[in-house]
Image (tube, rainbow, N blue to C red):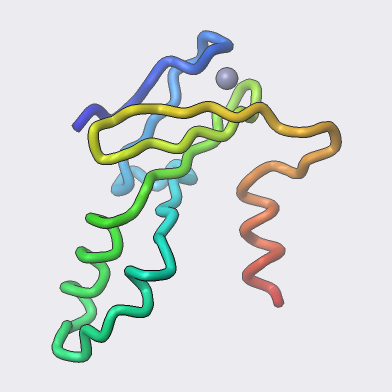
Length: 95
Ligand SMILES: [Zn+2]
């Protein structure tokens, strides 16, 4: 799988989960709620990542990218006043 894409603004956005550049995994609720009580932690994490959609934010224009398992990229521009993705996630973790 590719590890970066070119945003509409021209910036290169890295999407490798293991490089720690603010890449997230969007997981469908059905994959979270599956009964996988036999999974160990690594198997559970692997299943979640395998079934998830990557989410990355362009560091230049802050477009949000959803990236499927075939590396199709869908870009969404931020609305006016939207907080950066990392800030949004941090606020969610504080609840
Ligand atoms: Zn961009």
